[in-house]
Image 1 (cartoon, one colour):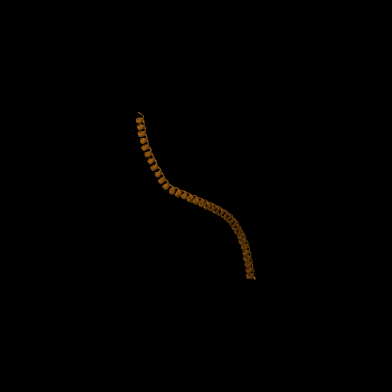
Image 2 (cartoon, helix red, strand yellow):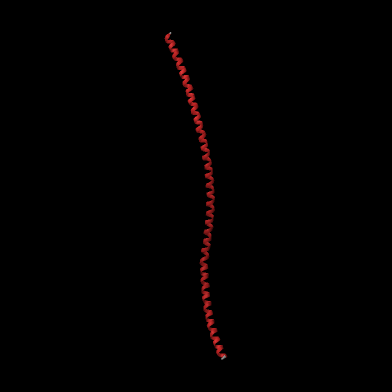
Length: 129
C-alpha cells in the first residue's frame, strides 16, 4: 500500500513536473515576446519623446514670434496715432493758412481797387486838363 501511494505520488509529481515545465515554457515564450515588444516600443517611445521636444521648441519659438508681432503691432499703433495727431495739426494749420490767404487776398484786392481808383482819378484829371 505504501508502494502504491509512493507510485501515485510519483505519477502526480511527474505530471506536476510536466505541467510546471509547460508553464515555464509558456512563461519563457511570453517573456521573450515581451522583450521583443519592448525592443520595438523603446525606439518608438524615444522617437515620440524627440517629437514632443521638437513640438515644445516650436511652441516656444512661436510664442516668442507672437510676442514680437504683438510688440510690432503696438509700435505701429503708436505711430498711427502720432500720424493721426500730426495730420490733424496739419489740417488745422492748413485751415489757418487758408484763412490768412483769404485775408491777404482781400487786403490785396482792397489795395488793387484803391490803386485802380487812384489811377482812374488821375487819368480823369489829366483828360480834363
